Image (cartoon, rainbow, N blue to C red; front, side, top):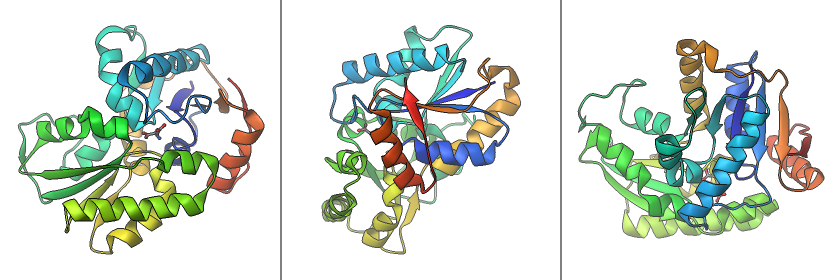
Length: 270
Ligand code: DGL
């Protein structure tokens, strides 16, 4: 009854941590495509091909339901996968709809027409590919009116995090927040639209200031998944064990993952 969790690298571990705390009895198989990270600088075709390959690997591991814990894959590939590629008995879900539902004060599956919401000035921090896709703005426009979104592509940040260079990562967060504030001086809310960024959440909050509400995905996705599994209990596949798979070097990836999550994580080759 395992559920698959996929990211280009280590960022999806922030989501994995939250879903495993929320659903302690569900085994999760995590797959990091570290060999091909970062996805955020790739074009949409490339992200689509890599995401399909990773999803198939998780289906092979007995996970009929796969969570794309990667905004870049969710933004650049998910719609195309759902339209033409995913077989009827499998499901692939993305991570940014739960976030947008929280921002727009909606319950899961509330498809009523777009309406005015409390926040009007929203800063979006994401990878270049996610920003280019405009998927956040599209999903937001289905649900809210009058929300001004300023997007900041955070070039270099995922590489720095994957490399474990937290000094560079902090400097990049501060300069991307500065760049955003030049375009939108007073955002009311900020979306961390990349699952790597919660690892830098305190720096984002510090650079943005205490008055800005910072939304990150992990807990919101965990709640949505719990809700989904109540409504679709048969969607957990045949896999029985939790494990961590990587397309990269298992030792190196395990060491970085352990450093991030501050508990021992052992990856094996995918
Ligand atoms: N953590 C991913 C995301 O949420 C991927 C970033 C990347 O590989 O560039 O977008």
